[in-house]
Image 1: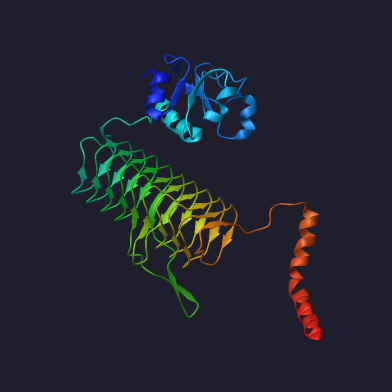
Image 2: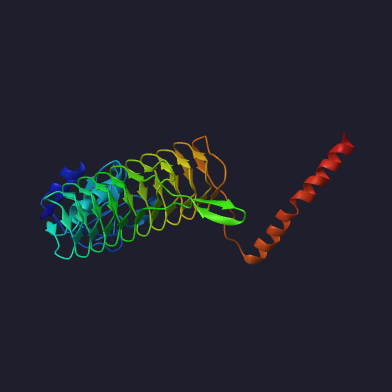
Length: 337
């Protein structure tokens, strides 16, 4: 499909200034875009490139229009508009409809005629696969799994028993959903495994990044609500609940039975303890350590940013001396009283 600026403007709800018939074939940064690319300005530090860019069109706010020397699409949020335009220009490639001859299909499965099952896929018994579902090569789908309409599993995804996947879900390579959680009990110094009898429920419009793992519930289910976006290499423990439209960056670890609210944003490398609650609308900056519940919306941070090693050693020594300093202050306060 040929995308003209007129068509793009109509699809993303932007006002066009310039050549409506201009053909756009790709995207690019303001610095490197070509005449057939569309670019955008969402960060003011790149405004300096607006009047020199070679892009065929730039998406900007009304306030930045005066600096644009090429075609422009005017909209309130250029970054969201860019995301929509890029989706038009780079649609997902889909596998052929049908079941590859090398796939293994179990008994009593319901697979929609419009589904796509790639090579070397294993599907267990009593599996339901909805309309337009795309299963990539090497995926493993165990017994009693359900995958709803328009969802896609990329290569080598594993869905363990009784997992439910909602509509329009994207699971990237290496994702494992429904493996046993870390449930163990100590008997006289020996660890006994606790059977994990819950499952995992994934809502609609969820995206899970490569090599992320989501454990099944110990008794009740682990739940990932509608619109959640998870980055790569995240670990989510058993019985965790994540509310709608929360986003979590890479390498986050969430311990079991933690409740994360809706519309939260959790920065990369954060560690979250188990059995706590994080309310709606919380932002946690990267590399934070959350050990207690957060019951008030807002931004939270912890940890010490990188600094020269010599300064870091000196500050750590001072930190270790805080208890002694606190005792001395109490003694002085007692004398003054």
